[in-house]
Length: 141
Image (cartoon, rainbow, N blue to C red):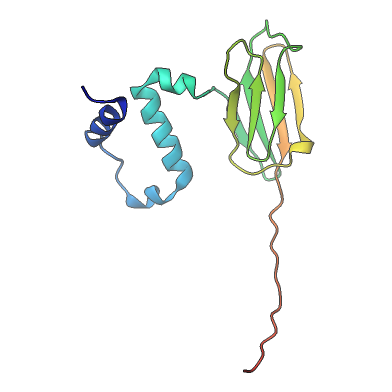
């Protein structure tokens, strides 16, 4: 009897990867593709990993995440933790907290969350890129 890992490897061998090798060099695309394939093949594993449905929008200065909670959400039990690369929601009635990976690094202390009766909207400012330039001294040996 083969293990789940061997079964997954055998299944992946039969899958056709999309054409265009240049897409394979984009880590975000590869991550999304693998997650999608695993979710289709092993739905229980995807739910156990805390995969949640959230609408993520990105502007020049911020990242906005819209997470449907429903009208009966108990806001006193829900805990939102913002980190530089993800947000975590716990107290949703599941044992595992929901983790949402963000497309860009953000400033967690700028987190602004609003609940409109059905959807939790979380807005975070992007972390500015630091382009440091140093003039080096050239010495003769």
